Structures are given as structure tokens and as C-alpha cells.
Length: 204
Length: 213
Length: 144
Image 1 (spheres, each protein chain N blue to C red):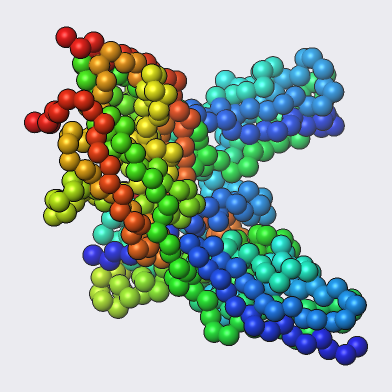
Image 2 (image 1 turned 180 degrees about the vertical axis):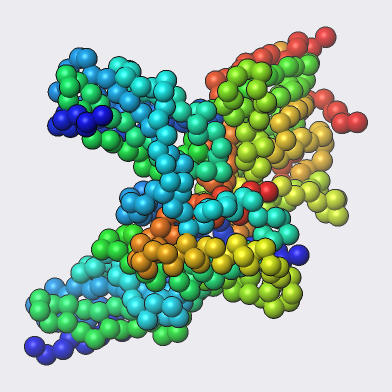
């Protein structure tokens, strides 16, 4: 049987610690082409005879994308490869050019909503998964030098930051932090709110 | 003594049920065995050569056996095993999987006590204690067992129905600048990031801030 | 002081996913690789770094490669743990090269005992038993 062409344009899309392998389809007129994906970590290259490990969720699939997040679970350099099959005919492996290390994932600022509830400053953060913590900075408008920080490890719907005095605006911005790769996103847009209280009070 | 004729069906689903490191062995009766089945229990420390019988669980007809005392050292791991007897017949010994008290226990929610002033509520949380042999025994808080233990506290404003969450490491929380004469309901949960352990949320403790003078 | 960041949560979750499967493959209740005759918990705090370094080398160099199973899900989780261990092993080696993780006689003896326990079994049984005892190592490492 004539060999199928190997999959081309193999690349990684990695955002917020979600990693996807993609490739261009192999076109064989009138045939359904199926693909299989394998990975190889640094451990396999150096200690396990350069062995490859199949990803069964991406074995003989027709899609040209594979979610490899669960297998890229260490901060080391990974190799990835794809092959095509049509019936008994198969292609050579197409291999990702260069390695992929999750440390290169792109981290986006978190979606955030700041809430003033009476004299209380609260923030609603998007749940981005167990790998993510949030660093939330808040300050009284005009007093950027007295910025305060709160680290939020577990996202619950509305997280209490602090109490506010009536009058001034309070501003908040947040970034994500991923301990596994020791990196942070850029900060979100700043949002400012004001206490919703009738009377003015000041904490001693 | 000669071994009995072991063709009785085996006890099933032999496993530890552990809460705050009170470690109780549970099992189900052999299929179709009917009444009158008796059991005996033994346990072993993983890596140590011998099985140890549990006298208080010899010839019992219940399907549980408290092994908390025998498995109280949470730096060790354990196996336990059960054998059934009926009318001169017996079953095989049926074992648990390896039991690690530190990672395989469940944790109760913390105790919550709440007090209030006109405009604030004060919350004191108490982590549950590790199981102990007797009330006079030394109390060990789970805080000592799990140094990374933290609390999630939920505060619900009954009037506005808005719920806030706080994550704290120490066991006290004061929420100031609340509305006078308003009911707030507090519940709390324990969570440990590694090993990953979460208690459920405690039942809600409601209290009203005092009315404006 | 040797300070390294490692994602214990990921290693723990990888191990929890295969713990029952791996431990069920180890029928020997009467011997432990890491805890026999003395528990890791008896190691002095000054020797913790040395023992940790040696154990990460032990797992990467000797254990994981002999743990291949017929179950591809288990193999993927073992790969995940092995690559995480490799990442930590490198950081520990840097500490060692900066003389921050030195080994005295006692930890060296303790590690020799672990190797003797390991070599006392056939290689596959020893590797599977060692992998099944990963929580003993992780619990000890996290103990303050």
C-alpha cells in the first residue's frame, strides 16, 4: 500500500494552561482519514529509551485537533507527533517542530467584576481551574502608593476584599498566577466603585 | 486447630470508613448467607511482617469493627481483613486496599460560633480534633495534622440574599460595617490543598446585628 | 537552605488517580521499600534535603522505567509523575551543586537501606512497590 503523506503544519495552541495540538488535514479523495497522536516527555527521552506514549482520546480520530492538557502535566520539554490512517494505509509520523514546554502558555488577565455592597468591596472572579490563583490589588483612588493585595486561591462566587469608607472611589485590578510554571498574567482592566452608604463613617 | 472447610461466600466490600481519623472497618455480609454469620478481624501495619487479631471483633455478628486505636499512627499505612463463619464453614480472608489515614480520612466541617454588635459580626472557627482513645486523652487538632489547613467562610445577608466568601488561615473573622438589625447566616468549610481534602460546609449559624440605637 | 518550588498538588493528583491500581499489583504486605526498618519520619530535619535529593534520583533513575503496565491510562499518569520528578530532580541537583543539600553519614546509610530493600526484590516488583509507596514520600515531604 502506498504511504499516506504525513500530517503537516503541526502546531500547539496553548492558552491559560489548556494545550491543544493542531495540524492540517491530509486530503485523500473519497476517503475518511483518521489521525493518532503520541507524546514524549523529557523523562521518556532521557530515561525510557525515547519511548512515545499514545493519547487514547486522540487515537484514530477524524478531527485535526487534540486536547493534550492532561498529558502535558509537568514543566519539561515535550515532543508531539501525529500520523494518518486510511484503512490499512498509514503515513509516517509528522512531528512538532521543536519542543513544547507549558511554561510558554499564554496567560490572559482574568475576567473580573468589582462589586460595592454597602461599605464592602467585593470581587467576582472567573474560575479558571485548579492550577490558577489570583492576585487582587485594591486601593483608594489617588492613593496608588497604598495599594493592598489579596491572594485568592480558591475561586468562590463573590470574594470579600475589604471594607470601604463612604466617599472616595476604590479601584481594583487582578492578575492570575500559576504556581506550576511560576508565571503571572498581565493585570486586568482597573475597575473602580464607591461605597453605597448614606452616612459617612471612618474606621478608627 | 484444623482449618474449617472454607467454602462460605466471602464478606464483600471490605473497606475503611474514616472521619477525623476515626477509622472503622466496614464490610457487607457474604451473598445469600442469611442470619447467623459470625466474623473475625485482623489488621497489619504495611511493611511489618505480621497480622494482628482484634479480640473485640472476634466472633461478632455486626459488619463493622472500630480499628481507630490500632491505626492511630497516621505516619503508617494499614491493611485489615475479615473472615466469615457459619455452621462450621468459613470464608477466605478478605482484605482492604492499603489505608493511609492521612490522605484517606474525611474531615468534618469546623465548629462555628458567631456573635454580633450593632454593625459587625465576629466569627470564631474551631477545626475538629483528631480521634482520640478517651475523652481524657491528649487533644490533637487537625490543624496540627494538616499545617496548610484553611477555612472558606460564607456570609449570607438574609435581607439582600447576597452571599460573600472569605478565605482565611487563622480561625477568627470580624465582618464590620454591616447593616443594623439585619440577619446574617454564616457557614464554613475546611480545605487542605495538599493532600487535597475538603470538608463539607457547616450548617448555617444565623445571627442578627443589633438594631440602630 | 535549598528552596525549590514544585507542584505537589499535580503529583498528588496524578498518584491518587493510579494509587489503587498500582498498590493492587503489590502483594507483599510485609516489606516496605521506604519505611523498612525505619520510617522516613525518623530522618532528622537537617538530613531531609539530602534524602529527598537521593529519593528523587532513585525514582527517576531506577523506578519509573520499570513500571510500564498494560493500562495506557496508568502509563500516562506514570509519565506525568516521572516528568514532574525529573523537573524537581534538576532543581535539587542545582542545590547540591551549590552545597546546599549535603549528605552526612546517617542519611547515606538510610538511603543505602532503601536501595537494599529495593534490590532485595525482583526489579518489576520492587519498582511497582516503590511507586505504590509514593504517598509515603509525599506525606513525609509535606510534614512540616
